[in-house]
Amino acid sequence: TNESYSGLMNYLFGPKRRKKMTKDAFLKFRGQMIDELLYLQFTRFCKDLPDLPNIPKQQFPIITDVEFCEHLLANLNIPSKKKAQMIKRVTKFYGESSTNPTQLAEGITFDEFRSFYHVLYCGADFERAMYFYDLDHGGITKDQFVELSQWISDMEVDSHLVDVIFLLLDEDGHQLLSIQDFHPLLEEWRHSR
Image (cartoon, rainbow, N blue to C red; front, side):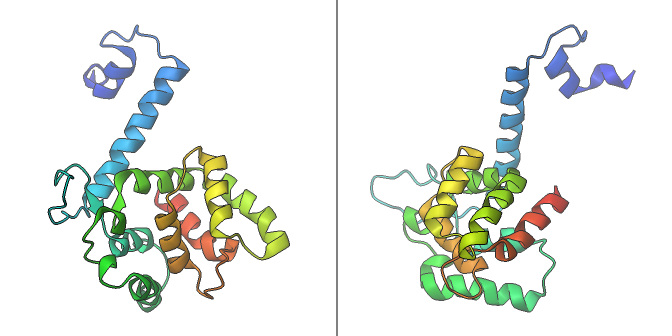
């Protein structure tokens, strides 16, 4: 039968389906799969940095801030003109480095990319936590975003990445990210997955 040729079934349970799969082994496998899929998404946008002193060229592939924003907004159900305005806030703030980084700190590494997507994987919990902050303050600050991200996903989101997300989503520029600002991104993430 076709089941005997399933690479996934063979990996999980062995060719004769007698291998036991523990919860820890499955969670490890799941984490590896998620990271592999994220890496494939990340490498679609990878840029080479110019030669930098003391850093081998391919050791730290990066994507630009604009490419990260375009990736986040790709399936968002908002007009193209609004997406362009959102990205323009990022390019206006970071200038040339947002599209043509010259150093590692001006781009987004895979670890930074992955940490943010782990927050999105925990989106429902993150949204609930934001709700309670939102009740009292009308949104969350960048520091609260980092704190909630780590609390929810057990991953620390890089401060540069948080700055980019706030520039992209905080239409009012009041340095607070509300549920209304963040919800479309979470909703798109759920629907596209």
